[in-house]
Length: 40
Image (cartoon, rainbow, N blue to C red; front, side, top):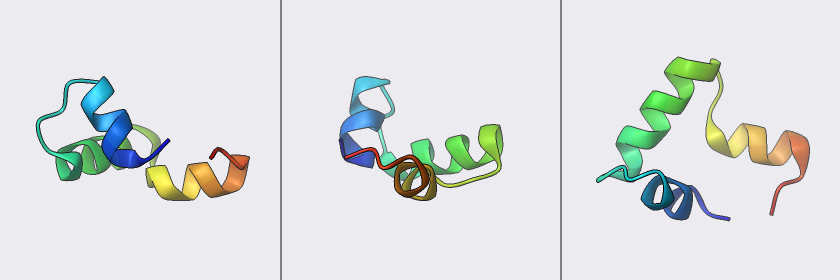
Protein backbone atom coordinates (compact mmCIF):
# COMPACT_ATOMS: atom_id res chain seq x y z
CA UNK A 1 0.00 0.00 0.00
CA UNK A 2 1.41 3.39 -0.92
CA UNK A 3 2.03 6.17 1.57
CA UNK A 4 -0.57 8.21 -0.28
CA UNK A 5 -3.17 5.46 0.16
CA UNK A 6 -2.41 5.17 3.88
CA UNK A 7 -2.62 8.94 4.28
CA UNK A 8 -6.00 8.99 2.53
CA UNK A 9 -7.26 6.05 4.63
CA UNK A 10 -6.27 7.94 7.79
CA UNK A 11 -7.99 11.11 6.53
CA UNK A 12 -4.86 13.19 6.04
CA UNK A 13 -5.51 15.89 3.43
CA UNK A 14 -1.87 15.92 2.32
CA UNK A 15 0.45 12.89 2.15
CA UNK A 16 3.36 15.12 3.20
CA UNK A 17 1.55 15.87 6.47
CA UNK A 18 1.15 12.15 7.04
CA UNK A 19 4.87 11.51 6.42
CA UNK A 20 5.89 14.30 8.81
CA UNK A 21 3.49 13.10 11.50
CA UNK A 22 4.56 9.47 11.07
CA UNK A 23 8.22 10.45 11.46
CA UNK A 24 7.41 12.52 14.57
CA UNK A 25 5.44 9.61 16.10
CA UNK A 26 7.86 6.80 15.24
CA UNK A 27 11.24 8.43 14.58
CA UNK A 28 11.30 6.83 11.13
CA UNK A 29 9.75 7.38 7.72
CA UNK A 30 6.86 5.27 6.44
CA UNK A 31 8.96 4.14 3.47
CA UNK A 32 11.76 2.86 5.71
CA UNK A 33 9.29 0.92 7.88
CA UNK A 34 7.73 -0.58 4.73
CA UNK A 35 11.16 -1.71 3.53
CA UNK A 36 12.24 -3.09 6.92
CA UNK A 37 9.10 -5.17 7.31
CA UNK A 38 8.63 -5.95 3.59
CA UNK A 39 5.16 -4.43 3.43
CA UNK A 40 3.99 -4.12 -0.17
